[in-house]
Length: 189
Image (cartoon, rainbow, N blue to C red; front, side):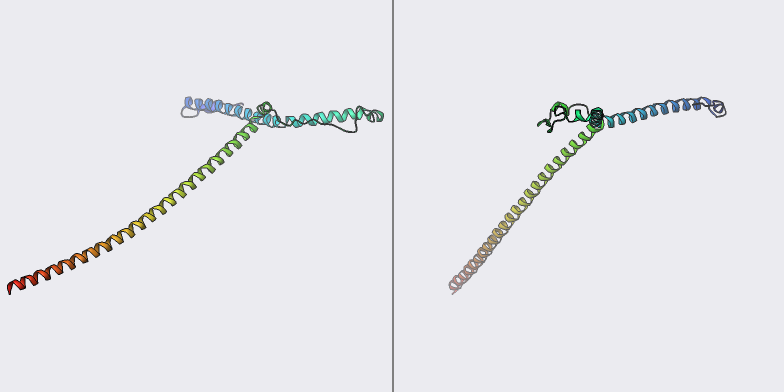
């Protein structure tokens, strides 16, 4: 484009305006070239993705044009137009065909799809591990509660036995005191 540098002299700093203008111009050109390359790449990818279908469509058009040039007698020739058409279809795909370049967009889609499946699988595994961990935690809590209940029962039983022994000891002490008192009374008499 055309530009007028006379306006630069009217600014406060001619050098800084000139540097900014040149920098801006260079960056805009680089950005526009990158944009052009990206657009061309996307168009090429779209064409590459549909190349096989377009090829088959063009081939079918050529066959139709060729058939139009044939006479009716030639069209009835069984060697050129048999009653039955046999088609050979491969049963297994050749893995080398899958590895061919099929366009960056399709390749990117395949990569994203594979990554998505991988993430889903990892999430599923993580969820299974979390469920197992949760189940183990619950079982551990249940075992702990059972153990606590057994301990509580045992403590209650031991406390009852202790109370019983304490009562027996008191009874024995009381009888001992009575016996001592009775002996002391007899000795005093």
